[in-house]
Length: 273
Ligand code: BTN
Image (tube, rainbow, N blue to C red; front, side, top):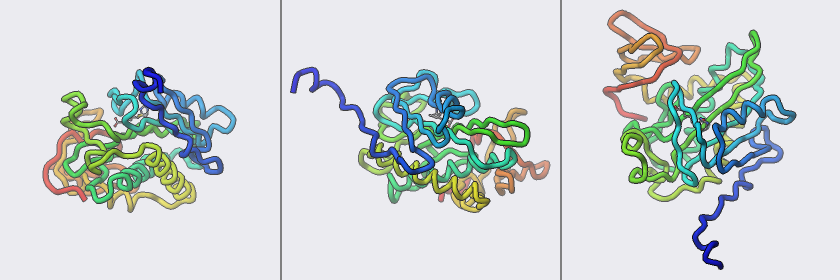
C-alpha cells in the first residue's frame, strides 16, 4: 500500500443499495459534492425513467431545510438523499406523501438503532426520546391544476456524526443513530432499508391506504403543550390530534385550531413513545 492510499478514506460502495427491479432506487446517483440533492432530483422528474430515481450526496453546498433553514452534514458520516417521484396521487392527497416518508424514515432508523426510543415530531422530524432530531425531511411538490405531477422527497439522517464533532448549536438539538445504537451504523444497509420502506409506503398511499393511523401512533407531539411557529406567528396550545388532512390540532384558550404547516418550537409534558 502506498503512503497516499493509506491516508485516503475509502469511498463508500453504495451499489448494494441499487434495486434494479424496484420502483424506488432503480437508479442511484452518487455525488461527492452537489448544490442540493433536491434540485438534482427535481431535474430527474422530467427525465425518461426519472420516477423513483435516487440522488445521494456526501456534501451539499446549499443543502436546504424546512422554513428556509440550511441543512449541514459532513462528508462520509450521514445520509443525504432525495427521491424523484411521479406519484399516482391527486394534488389534494399530496400531504400523505409527507406522512408516508416520515414513517418510512422512522422505520429505517428504528431498524438501525434497535431498542432506542424514536418517534415523529410533527410534521415530519424523526426525534430521539429527548426530542433531539435524528432526521429531517424536505418535501417539494410540483402541481398542475388538480394534479400532482411530481414530488421530491429530500431526506437527511444523522447517522455516524458524533455530538462532539457537531457545531455546538447543532449538538444541542441533534442526535445521531450511532449514539443511540452505541456503535457505528452501516450507511449502505440503512439506505437499503429506507428505500425498501419507502417503496412499501408508496404502494400503500397510491392504493388508497392512508398512513394517518400509523402516523398518529408514532407522533410524539400529541398530548404535549406546544408553541408552534406559523407564517402568521406563534400559536400556543395542547396538541390534541392530527386531523384527516394531516394538520396538527391544538386546543388553545380561544378554541381548537388546525395547523397545516409550522414548526413545533417548544414542548412541555408527556414522554415520547
Ligand atoms: C428539515 O428538517 O429542516 C429538513 C431537512 C432536509 C434535508 C435534506 S438533505 C437531502 C435533501 N436535500 C436538501 O437540500 N435538503 C434535503
